[in-house]
Image (cartoon, rainbow over all chains, first blue to last red; front, side, top):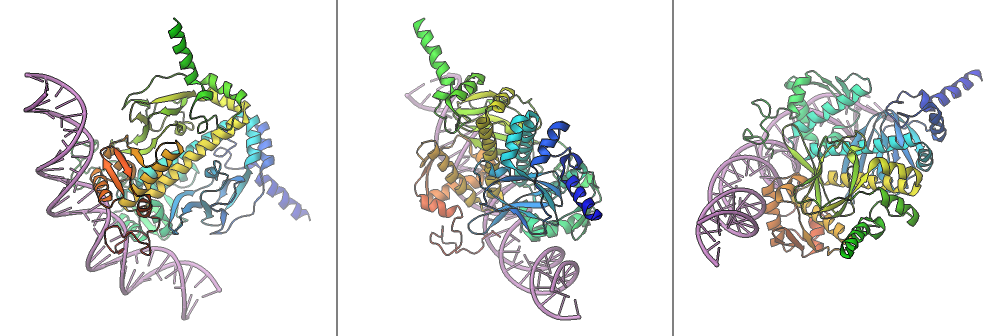
Length: 263
Length: 263
DNA sequence: CGATAATTTGAAGGTTGTCAAGTCCGGTGG
DNA sequence: CCACCGGACTTGACAACCTTCAAATTATCG
């Protein structure tokens, strides 16, 4: 009994924004303690999801936003022919579901890449609280604006870049996100399959596989299945197109160092 | 005097949301007449921009959102090497500047493609009014959510699609936007250069040029410089990948399906 | 431990990028 | 008014990067 009680308390605590490790990354950032409680109260408990389980699916009615607490997710669209496009991979602190606000239906599917947990935030209630807490409203706009930015970065990556650059950019960006989460930025654990990663990058799985092999033999990475260790950040940076001309740095478009396939 | 007075009135009227033809597409949608006046009051007049002039540039401090009133714009990012990526083309009713909300600095540049006008909406004041007008707040979230959706569509287009499909998808989508604006959906006026269009599509200018030629000879389009007339919507739909499975008709040029580059 | 899926590796071909040259159009100046 | 000029656009030839197809190898899971 005693133990059961303790478990419940712990659970309650874990559900609470104030006790959450993501405090600074999530909606509560920049919100006072008083208002935090009001946010706490609208949160709904949710049991962990297993790999492959969806939080929401395309066309499902919109009711809540979801904050990733632990684990990771992918979001993707699927068209009539069954082709799909991975839109993003999502780590703790990220908020999923914004694309449903305008149509009241989800426009994509969000699936767990591993055993994961989320906070469910009923949107109607969130909007209500936000209307009374300007800081929360501002934060909400900030978060969705960041999503727009991320999509733009994805777009930049997809627009006419070599396969190798794309993978390098992805790894660098993932590493940065690890750093922000206080994880070791050199050791990446890819929750997604090669197929999903390839899809995200706009490539086929064979290309990604070859790329990993090549980058390993170049001494940039150590690849061991889902675990990727970044051995040489400088080289990775170079492969990402930073100084894409072999000569040196800047030469924006003067004489694009022939052979390059870029515009 | 009399005449001058009339001009001023007209100008004032034009600035007013209530009198704006974009009424239903813009922020005022779903807002009562009373609240509309409060929105009116924060709008700032702005003289027309000429082709090539920017509304804002990357890294400029964020202060306002901008609603396209007339004309058209492109938004694009530029990286250190000078490579740029066109993120979108924007017609009347669209709102620019959301990507700056999170960092307080613009993340891209917005440039007029032709002589155009915008409404400037100071963000701080907008947020203030929105805090008191829940419908406005909701509409604001809807609009930015739609932007996320548009970016996702762009991403789907960029992710592993043939050049021809990309152009077809773009034209179809532009045609739909024309329809929503009550313009003739068959007659598109491309304000952007071939180079800008190619960049948006993730291709090079030569490919786009060849594509226009081919689609014209296929009887899908009539291309006359910047003016594109959609002759056969069904064929355009087919080229966009709708029924890309060989089962359907319209085998563009006899090339029998094989070699498809899709996953 | 065996079956199935995921990943890797190899060979060949195609779509699209690169390079190069020609055409068209608008604008300017004589 | 017309000729000239410069930039945008088009067209052609060739090559390269990546995809496709095929098969081997390695992991995963009951």
